[in-house]
Image 1 (cartoon, one colour):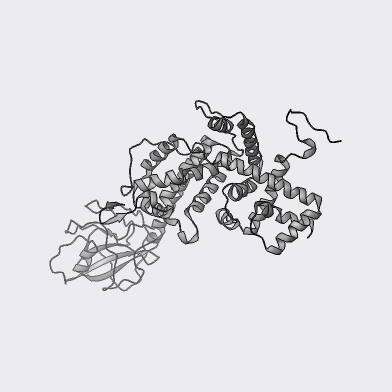
Image 2: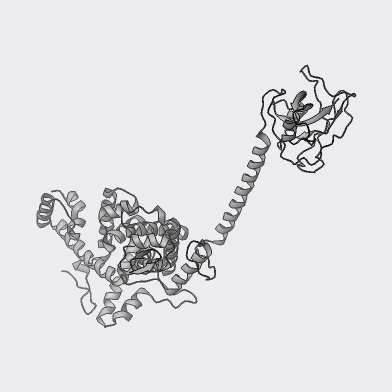
Length: 267
Length: 213
């Protein structure tokens, strides 16, 4: 056995850990023949005794009674009703956190909250629950989340070129979501008639909270025919009688295909 | 045995650590007290041996048992005993706190606290005159262990002081068995160099240095 091999085993030999029989015999034989390695084994055995005395001397150490009280207090701070709860006062459990580090922790938490809030707002703005399918009489439009307490149509003058269309809050003041100002509405590309001076139309009822002004500005208004019951389900404030009756309605479509608002048109 | 509701429950005295933990997680305060009384010393001693600070060690005790309450369901009995799990949590927590502190804090009286040093604790407990030298030697060993790098210190504490096997210590630390073995070898070589006096420099009983001619 070489000295470097012996050095790898000397700790195990001194601690009497299990070794292969052959390795143990060779190691002891080497220690008997090599004075430095023999001395090393002797030193390691003395170290064992020192460590044993140290372990016995420190083996009776216990945390103070205050540690138990602080633990109880910390448990009381975080315990759920399902767990045992005591009423001890709250004590900080981390005495080693430096004040500067604590301030940075708060700042980091605040920044994270701000980023999360902005992300949620951006997500709400860009995502749209509305369908993108072309509008027809049997289309499924997104129902307005606002209640529709009013049933009467409120005729509003509509410019022939459909400019300056605006969406206002419903009378119920429900959504308060958005108002579109000075929109340029292109002429509808469908064959359907748009509201003219011979028609009366209700105010536009918003169909979605997400108001993409750019999409609305470049959008179109499409005339549809839908059953009264369907319009009521979408939140349009009209009377519920004769639900099967088909009613003309104008749908404001954004250039992304999203239906943003609807109004009823009466000839 | 005592009756709690529909079934008989073993008294905490005879229950295993795993049974006590299971009952603790179900809200049994008595079981938690029993587990704390049984294993608080283990956690505290290991933290003390690693850090040299009773204040830090007590914080570690608190953190470890709180963590056990919160995350005790993560303990998998098939992977080892609860004591090793506690040692693993203690080791991680001590290292985290030591990194924050950068240096270890030796045992000393803190302001407003009458803390008894380790040497004084030992002499107070046994107090024969002959024990003073022993206490001083114990303090010397403590200083030598605390002077080791953390990755050497922990293997000495686990394998030589807590008497864990290489495999158990490897599980606690999260490293291969061979790493534990080689680190322990190196750590013990350093300790022997510091603690074991060479014959040519050993002082005699009267305090005079023997000169080897």
